[in-house]
Image (tube, rainbow, N blue to C red; front, side):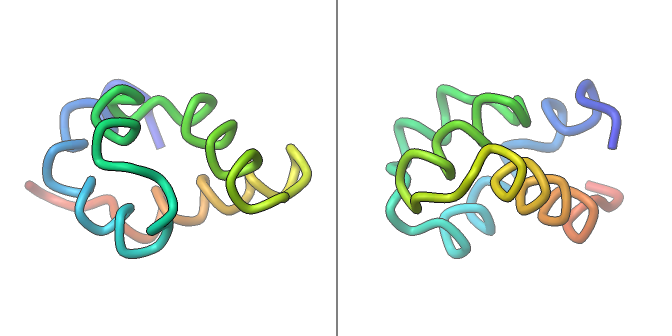
Length: 69
């Protein structure tokens, strides 16, 4: 997914991200503003995933939640 598109839709999908990754705070989700690399870093840190696992998880999340907002 195009990162610019994610940033534009981030406010709409941030709540879904909170449902998936409840250990990441609202403030942290606001700060990443849809940046996949930053979000993957938080997922890696909070959930003990490898970098590759976190990147794949974030990519899958964005792919599932893209849509017309």
